[in-house]
Image 1 (cartoon, rainbow, N blue to C red):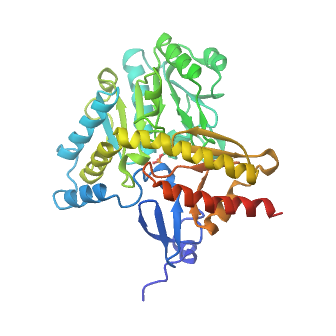
Image 2: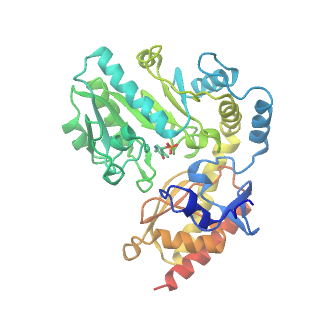
Image 3: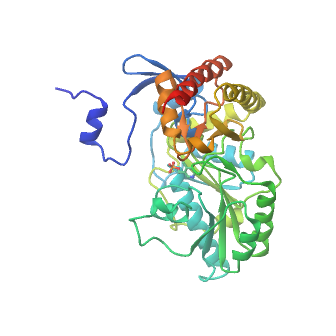
Length: 404
Ligand SMILES: *Cc1c(COP(=O)(O)O)cnc(C)c1O
Protein backbone atom coordinates (compact mmCIF):
# COMPACT_ATOMS: atom_id res chain seq x y z
CA UNK A 1 0.00 0.00 0.00
CA UNK A 2 1.34 3.42 -0.83
CA UNK A 3 1.78 5.77 2.13
CA UNK A 4 -0.33 8.87 2.71
CA UNK A 5 1.81 11.71 1.45
CA UNK A 6 1.30 14.19 4.23
CA UNK A 7 3.36 16.36 6.54
CA UNK A 8 3.43 13.56 9.09
CA UNK A 9 5.37 11.36 6.68
CA UNK A 10 7.99 14.08 6.36
CA UNK A 11 8.95 13.53 9.99
CA UNK A 12 9.28 9.82 9.37
CA UNK A 13 11.32 9.77 6.19
CA UNK A 14 13.11 13.10 5.85
CA UNK A 15 16.17 14.49 7.60
CA UNK A 16 14.73 17.21 9.84
CA UNK A 17 16.88 20.06 8.49
CA UNK A 18 13.71 21.73 7.15
CA UNK A 19 10.44 22.41 8.87
CA UNK A 20 7.96 22.82 6.03
CA UNK A 21 4.42 24.11 6.43
CA UNK A 22 1.66 21.52 6.77
CA UNK A 23 -0.02 22.38 3.45
CA UNK A 24 1.38 20.52 0.48
CA UNK A 25 1.16 22.34 -2.86
CA UNK A 26 0.76 19.92 -5.74
CA UNK A 27 0.11 22.07 -8.81
CA UNK A 28 0.96 25.53 -10.09
CA UNK A 29 -0.01 27.67 -13.04
CA UNK A 30 1.40 31.16 -13.48
CA UNK A 31 1.28 32.81 -10.05
CA UNK A 32 -1.38 30.53 -8.60
CA UNK A 33 -0.70 27.30 -6.72
CA UNK A 34 -3.09 24.61 -5.47
CA UNK A 35 -2.60 22.31 -2.49
CA UNK A 36 -3.66 18.70 -1.99
CA UNK A 37 -7.10 19.82 -0.81
CA UNK A 38 -7.59 21.97 -3.92
CA UNK A 39 -7.14 25.24 -2.01
CA UNK A 40 -5.69 27.98 -4.14
CA UNK A 41 -2.87 30.35 -3.19
CA UNK A 42 -1.31 33.38 -4.83
CA UNK A 43 2.42 32.94 -5.02
CA UNK A 44 4.47 35.96 -3.91
CA UNK A 45 7.39 33.69 -2.99
CA UNK A 46 8.33 32.26 -6.38
CA UNK A 47 10.12 29.32 -4.79
CA UNK A 48 12.76 31.52 -3.25
CA UNK A 49 13.18 33.93 -6.16
CA UNK A 50 13.34 30.90 -8.45
CA UNK A 51 10.19 30.66 -10.56
CA UNK A 52 10.87 33.87 -12.48
CA UNK A 53 8.19 33.13 -15.07
CA UNK A 54 5.74 31.58 -12.64
CA UNK A 55 4.76 27.94 -12.68
CA UNK A 56 4.63 25.84 -15.84
CA UNK A 57 5.31 28.70 -18.25
CA UNK A 58 4.44 27.31 -21.71
CA UNK A 59 7.77 28.23 -23.30
CA UNK A 60 9.76 26.59 -20.51
CA UNK A 61 7.54 23.51 -20.52
CA UNK A 62 8.03 23.27 -24.27
CA UNK A 63 11.83 23.68 -24.04
CA UNK A 64 11.95 20.95 -21.39
CA UNK A 65 9.75 18.55 -23.37
CA UNK A 66 11.66 19.10 -26.58
CA UNK A 67 15.02 18.49 -24.94
CA UNK A 68 13.65 15.53 -22.96
CA UNK A 69 12.88 13.80 -26.23
CA UNK A 70 16.35 14.48 -27.66
CA UNK A 71 19.08 14.03 -25.08
CA UNK A 72 19.06 14.16 -21.28
CA UNK A 73 22.69 13.79 -20.45
CA UNK A 74 26.14 13.26 -21.81
CA UNK A 75 29.07 13.97 -19.58
CA UNK A 76 31.71 16.63 -19.73
CA UNK A 77 33.77 14.24 -21.84
CA UNK A 78 31.52 15.49 -24.64
CA UNK A 79 30.13 18.92 -25.15
CA UNK A 80 26.45 19.50 -25.72
CA UNK A 81 24.51 21.97 -27.78
CA UNK A 82 22.21 23.35 -25.03
CA UNK A 83 25.24 24.21 -22.84
CA UNK A 84 26.98 25.98 -25.71
CA UNK A 85 23.85 27.89 -26.53
CA UNK A 86 23.29 29.01 -22.95
CA UNK A 87 26.95 29.98 -22.48
CA UNK A 88 26.81 32.06 -25.66
CA UNK A 89 23.65 33.81 -24.45
CA UNK A 90 25.17 34.60 -21.05
CA UNK A 91 28.33 35.97 -22.65
CA UNK A 92 26.31 38.08 -25.10
CA UNK A 93 24.14 39.53 -22.34
CA UNK A 94 26.75 40.25 -19.65
CA UNK A 95 30.36 41.34 -19.11
CA UNK A 96 31.39 37.69 -19.11
CA UNK A 97 33.56 35.93 -21.68
CA UNK A 98 33.57 32.46 -20.13
CA UNK A 99 30.99 30.35 -18.30
CA UNK A 100 31.22 27.38 -15.95
CA UNK A 101 28.01 25.46 -15.28
CA UNK A 102 27.00 24.04 -11.92
CA UNK A 103 23.74 22.71 -10.48
CA UNK A 104 23.03 25.19 -7.73
CA UNK A 105 24.00 28.53 -6.29
CA UNK A 106 26.34 27.11 -3.70
CA UNK A 107 28.18 25.16 -6.37
CA UNK A 108 28.51 28.23 -8.56
CA UNK A 109 29.97 30.12 -5.58
CA UNK A 110 32.22 27.21 -4.69
CA UNK A 111 33.63 27.44 -8.21
CA UNK A 112 33.97 31.23 -7.93
CA UNK A 113 35.87 31.07 -4.62
CA UNK A 114 38.13 28.27 -5.82
CA UNK A 115 38.82 30.16 -9.04
CA UNK A 116 39.70 33.33 -7.13
CA UNK A 117 42.15 31.38 -4.96
CA UNK A 118 43.67 29.66 -7.97
CA UNK A 119 43.98 32.87 -9.96
CA UNK A 120 45.86 34.58 -7.14
CA UNK A 121 48.00 31.48 -6.64
CA UNK A 122 48.89 31.40 -10.33
CA UNK A 123 49.72 35.09 -10.57
CA UNK A 124 51.02 36.04 -7.12
CA UNK A 125 51.62 32.91 -5.07
CA UNK A 126 49.96 31.10 -2.16
CA UNK A 127 50.18 33.99 0.32
CA UNK A 128 47.55 35.89 -1.67
CA UNK A 129 44.63 33.75 -0.56
CA UNK A 130 42.46 35.85 1.71
CA UNK A 131 38.78 36.15 0.81
CA UNK A 132 36.89 39.17 2.12
CA UNK A 133 33.18 38.85 2.60
CA UNK A 134 30.40 40.82 4.28
CA UNK A 135 28.76 40.27 7.62
CA UNK A 136 25.26 38.85 7.29
CA UNK A 137 25.90 37.72 3.72
CA UNK A 138 24.69 34.37 2.41
CA UNK A 139 26.54 32.37 -0.20
CA UNK A 140 25.26 28.80 0.16
CA UNK A 141 25.50 25.77 2.44
CA UNK A 142 28.62 23.85 1.41
CA UNK A 143 31.46 24.04 3.91
CA UNK A 144 33.38 26.62 1.87
CA UNK A 145 30.30 28.74 1.14
CA UNK A 146 29.07 28.79 4.76
CA UNK A 147 32.59 29.79 5.71
CA UNK A 148 32.61 32.69 3.28
CA UNK A 149 29.02 33.58 4.22
CA UNK A 150 28.71 36.12 6.99
CA UNK A 151 26.31 34.29 9.33
CA UNK A 152 28.09 32.41 12.08
CA UNK A 153 25.05 30.26 12.89
CA UNK A 154 25.49 28.37 9.60
CA UNK A 155 29.05 27.42 10.56
CA UNK A 156 28.44 26.42 14.15
CA UNK A 157 29.10 22.76 14.81
CA UNK A 158 30.78 22.23 11.46
CA UNK A 159 34.22 23.45 12.47
CA UNK A 160 37.00 23.31 11.57
CA UNK A 161 36.01 25.41 8.58
CA UNK A 162 38.33 26.57 5.79
CA UNK A 163 40.54 29.47 6.82
CA UNK A 164 41.77 32.60 5.09
CA UNK A 165 38.36 34.29 5.17
CA UNK A 166 37.45 37.60 6.84
CA UNK A 167 34.05 39.15 7.39
CA UNK A 168 33.60 42.92 7.24
CA UNK A 169 30.60 45.11 7.97
CA UNK A 170 28.45 45.50 4.84
CA UNK A 171 28.43 48.88 3.08
CA UNK A 172 31.33 50.08 5.25
CA UNK A 173 33.99 51.58 3.00
CA UNK A 174 36.37 52.45 5.84
CA UNK A 175 36.34 48.86 7.11
CA UNK A 176 37.07 47.62 3.61
CA UNK A 177 39.96 50.08 3.18
CA UNK A 178 41.39 48.98 6.51
CA UNK A 179 41.20 45.27 5.73
CA UNK A 180 42.00 44.80 2.06
CA UNK A 181 45.66 44.11 1.40
CA UNK A 182 48.14 42.39 -0.89
CA UNK A 183 47.01 39.14 0.73
CA UNK A 184 43.45 39.60 -0.51
CA UNK A 185 42.54 37.41 -3.47
CA UNK A 186 38.86 38.31 -3.67
CA UNK A 187 36.04 40.38 -2.25
CA UNK A 188 32.56 38.91 -2.57
CA UNK A 189 29.39 41.01 -2.42
CA UNK A 190 25.67 40.44 -2.91
CA UNK A 191 24.36 43.56 -4.74
CA UNK A 192 21.33 43.18 -2.47
CA UNK A 193 21.76 40.98 0.58
CA UNK A 194 18.88 38.54 0.23
CA UNK A 195 18.80 36.08 3.12
CA UNK A 196 20.36 38.83 5.26
CA UNK A 197 17.16 40.92 5.09
CA UNK A 198 16.93 42.54 1.60
CA UNK A 199 19.61 45.16 2.15
CA UNK A 200 21.00 46.85 -0.96
CA UNK A 201 24.69 47.63 -1.33
CA UNK A 202 25.20 51.37 -1.77
CA UNK A 203 26.57 52.71 -5.05
CA UNK A 204 29.49 54.28 -3.19
CA UNK A 205 30.33 50.95 -1.60
CA UNK A 206 30.31 49.10 -4.91
CA UNK A 207 32.44 51.84 -6.48
CA UNK A 208 34.94 51.74 -3.62
CA UNK A 209 35.00 47.95 -3.78
CA UNK A 210 35.91 48.07 -7.46
CA UNK A 211 38.65 50.65 -6.91
CA UNK A 212 40.17 48.86 -3.94
CA UNK A 213 40.09 45.48 -5.70
CA UNK A 214 41.91 47.04 -8.66
CA UNK A 215 44.49 48.65 -6.39
CA UNK A 216 45.25 45.37 -4.61
CA UNK A 217 44.78 43.09 -7.64
CA UNK A 218 41.94 41.27 -5.93
CA UNK A 219 39.00 39.87 -7.86
CA UNK A 220 35.59 41.39 -7.28
CA UNK A 221 32.92 38.68 -7.11
CA UNK A 222 29.23 39.52 -7.28
CA UNK A 223 26.91 36.86 -5.97
CA UNK A 224 23.83 37.52 -8.12
CA UNK A 225 22.18 34.22 -7.29
CA UNK A 226 19.16 35.98 -5.85
CA UNK A 227 19.37 39.36 -7.64
CA UNK A 228 20.03 38.02 -11.13
CA UNK A 229 17.86 37.06 -14.10
CA UNK A 230 15.67 40.16 -14.22
CA UNK A 231 14.75 40.26 -10.55
CA UNK A 232 15.74 43.93 -10.07
CA UNK A 233 14.54 45.19 -13.45
CA UNK A 234 17.86 44.64 -15.26
CA UNK A 235 19.00 41.21 -16.35
CA UNK A 236 21.66 41.42 -13.63
CA UNK A 237 21.70 43.93 -10.79
CA UNK A 238 25.28 45.05 -11.57
CA UNK A 239 23.90 46.49 -14.81
CA UNK A 240 22.23 49.30 -12.84
CA UNK A 241 25.65 50.79 -12.17
CA UNK A 242 29.02 51.24 -13.81
CA UNK A 243 30.66 48.72 -11.47
CA UNK A 244 31.54 45.51 -13.26
CA UNK A 245 32.70 42.43 -11.36
CA UNK A 246 35.45 40.02 -12.39
CA UNK A 247 33.37 36.98 -11.50
CA UNK A 248 29.61 36.70 -11.13
CA UNK A 249 27.48 33.81 -9.99
CA UNK A 250 23.91 33.15 -11.02
CA UNK A 251 21.46 30.36 -10.15
CA UNK A 252 17.97 30.38 -8.58
CA UNK A 253 15.84 31.99 -11.33
CA UNK A 254 18.24 30.91 -14.09
CA UNK A 255 16.40 27.62 -14.55
CA UNK A 256 13.01 28.95 -13.49
CA UNK A 257 12.64 25.89 -11.24
CA UNK A 258 15.01 23.51 -13.00
CA UNK A 259 18.23 23.22 -10.98
CA UNK A 260 21.13 25.01 -12.65
CA UNK A 261 23.81 27.47 -11.60
CA UNK A 262 26.61 29.21 -13.42
CA UNK A 263 29.81 31.09 -12.75
CA UNK A 264 30.67 33.80 -15.24
CA UNK A 265 34.02 35.53 -15.66
CA UNK A 266 36.45 37.21 -18.00
CA UNK A 267 38.62 34.94 -20.15
CA UNK A 268 41.86 35.99 -18.49
CA UNK A 269 40.48 34.90 -15.10
CA UNK A 270 39.02 31.72 -16.57
CA UNK A 271 42.54 30.64 -17.60
CA UNK A 272 43.22 29.61 -14.02
CA UNK A 273 40.70 26.76 -14.33
CA UNK A 274 42.74 24.59 -16.65
CA UNK A 275 41.79 21.07 -17.71
CA UNK A 276 41.24 18.95 -14.62
CA UNK A 277 41.23 21.72 -12.00
CA UNK A 278 37.49 21.68 -11.31
CA UNK A 279 34.38 19.94 -12.51
CA UNK A 280 30.91 18.52 -11.96
CA UNK A 281 29.09 15.48 -13.33
CA UNK A 282 25.83 17.28 -14.00
CA UNK A 283 27.13 20.80 -14.66
CA UNK A 284 25.89 21.87 -18.10
CA UNK A 285 23.14 19.25 -18.13
CA UNK A 286 21.23 19.60 -21.43
CA UNK A 287 17.78 19.71 -19.81
CA UNK A 288 18.72 22.53 -17.44
CA UNK A 289 20.57 24.47 -20.14
CA UNK A 290 17.69 24.17 -22.62
CA UNK A 291 15.24 25.52 -20.05
CA UNK A 292 17.60 28.32 -18.97
CA UNK A 293 18.17 29.46 -22.57
CA UNK A 294 14.43 29.64 -23.18
CA UNK A 295 13.97 31.53 -19.93
CA UNK A 296 16.72 34.08 -20.63
CA UNK A 297 15.25 34.83 -24.02
CA UNK A 298 11.87 35.59 -22.46
CA UNK A 299 13.22 37.54 -19.47
CA UNK A 300 15.77 39.66 -21.32
CA UNK A 301 13.17 41.73 -23.13
CA UNK A 302 11.88 45.22 -22.60
CA UNK A 303 8.40 43.87 -21.96
CA UNK A 304 9.49 41.72 -19.02
CA UNK A 305 12.14 44.03 -17.52
CA UNK A 306 9.99 47.17 -17.76
CA UNK A 307 7.16 45.05 -16.42
CA UNK A 308 9.23 44.30 -13.33
CA UNK A 309 9.50 48.02 -12.59
CA UNK A 310 5.80 48.72 -13.12
CA UNK A 311 4.93 45.75 -10.92
CA UNK A 312 7.33 47.00 -8.25
CA UNK A 313 5.47 50.32 -8.31
CA UNK A 314 2.14 48.56 -7.99
CA UNK A 315 3.39 46.51 -5.03
CA UNK A 316 4.91 49.52 -3.29
CA UNK A 317 1.84 51.73 -3.71
CA UNK A 318 -0.53 49.13 -2.34
CA UNK A 319 1.83 48.02 0.41
CA UNK A 320 2.09 51.63 1.56
CA UNK A 321 -1.70 51.94 1.56
CA UNK A 322 -2.14 48.72 3.50
CA UNK A 323 0.50 49.82 5.96
CA UNK A 324 -1.42 53.04 6.64
CA UNK A 325 -4.47 50.97 7.47
CA UNK A 326 -2.58 48.29 9.39
CA UNK A 327 0.71 49.76 10.59
CA UNK A 328 2.95 46.73 10.66
CA UNK A 329 6.02 47.76 8.72
CA UNK A 330 8.72 50.29 9.30
CA UNK A 331 10.22 50.24 5.85
CA UNK A 332 9.93 48.72 2.38
CA UNK A 333 13.27 48.10 0.75
CA UNK A 334 14.86 46.26 -2.12
CA UNK A 335 14.58 46.71 -5.84
CA UNK A 336 12.35 45.44 -8.61
CA UNK A 337 10.53 42.32 -7.47
CA UNK A 338 12.87 41.55 -4.60
CA UNK A 339 11.13 43.47 -1.84
CA UNK A 340 11.69 43.39 1.89
CA UNK A 341 9.01 44.58 4.32
CA UNK A 342 10.78 45.30 7.60
CA UNK A 343 8.60 44.98 10.71
CA UNK A 344 8.19 47.86 13.14
CA UNK A 345 10.45 47.74 16.20
CA UNK A 346 7.68 46.49 18.53
CA UNK A 347 6.91 43.59 16.16
CA UNK A 348 10.47 42.37 15.66
CA UNK A 349 10.92 38.62 15.51
CA UNK A 350 7.36 37.99 14.31
CA UNK A 351 7.80 37.71 10.53
CA UNK A 352 7.12 33.98 10.57
CA UNK A 353 3.86 34.56 12.44
CA UNK A 354 2.70 36.99 9.75
CA UNK A 355 3.77 34.56 7.03
CA UNK A 356 1.58 31.86 8.61
CA UNK A 357 -1.44 34.16 8.74
CA UNK A 358 -0.88 35.10 5.11
CA UNK A 359 -0.73 31.43 4.20
CA UNK A 360 -4.12 30.96 5.90
CA UNK A 361 -5.48 33.86 3.87
CA UNK A 362 -4.21 32.28 0.66
CA UNK A 363 -0.98 34.04 -0.18
CA UNK A 364 2.50 32.52 -0.16
CA UNK A 365 5.27 34.76 1.20
CA UNK A 366 8.85 34.39 2.35
CA UNK A 367 10.76 35.76 5.26
CA UNK A 368 14.33 37.06 5.21
CA UNK A 369 15.39 36.63 8.80
CA UNK A 370 13.00 36.97 11.75
CA UNK A 371 12.07 40.61 11.11
CA UNK A 372 11.47 40.88 7.37
CA UNK A 373 8.74 39.65 5.03
CA UNK A 374 10.24 39.02 1.62
CA UNK A 375 8.41 39.13 -1.70
CA UNK A 376 9.98 37.52 -4.75
CA UNK A 377 7.07 36.77 -7.08
CA UNK A 378 7.11 35.83 -10.74
CA UNK A 379 8.50 38.64 -12.90
CA UNK A 380 5.35 38.40 -15.01
CA UNK A 381 2.79 38.05 -12.25
CA UNK A 382 -0.54 39.36 -13.60
CA UNK A 383 -1.68 42.67 -12.11
CA UNK A 384 -4.92 41.04 -10.98
CA UNK A 385 -2.90 38.51 -8.96
CA UNK A 386 -0.87 41.30 -7.36
CA UNK A 387 -4.06 43.10 -6.33
CA UNK A 388 -5.82 39.97 -5.09
CA UNK A 389 -2.71 38.71 -3.29
CA UNK A 390 -2.20 42.04 -1.55
CA UNK A 391 -5.85 42.10 -0.45
CA UNK A 392 -5.26 38.71 1.15
CA UNK A 393 -2.02 39.97 2.67
CA UNK A 394 -3.95 42.97 4.04
CA UNK A 395 -6.35 40.62 5.82
CA UNK A 396 -3.36 38.84 7.31
CA UNK A 397 -1.85 42.16 8.46
CA UNK A 398 -5.18 43.06 10.06
CA UNK A 399 -5.31 39.77 11.97
CA UNK A 400 -1.63 40.07 12.87
CA UNK A 401 -2.28 43.37 14.63
CA UNK A 402 -5.22 41.91 16.54
CA UNK A 403 -3.25 38.92 17.85
CA UNK A 404 -1.57 39.20 21.22
C1 LIG B 1 20.17 31.05 -2.52
C2 LIG B 1 21.49 31.70 -2.53
C3 LIG B 1 22.68 30.96 -2.60
C4 LIG B 1 22.69 29.44 -2.57
O1 LIG B 1 22.07 28.87 -3.66
P1 LIG B 1 21.66 27.32 -3.58
O2 LIG B 1 21.09 27.05 -4.95
O3 LIG B 1 20.68 27.18 -2.47
O4 LIG B 1 22.89 26.54 -3.32
C5 LIG B 1 23.87 31.65 -2.65
N1 LIG B 1 23.91 32.98 -2.65
C6 LIG B 1 22.79 33.74 -2.59
C7 LIG B 1 22.89 35.22 -2.62
C8 LIG B 1 21.54 33.12 -2.52
O5 LIG B 1 20.43 33.86 -2.43
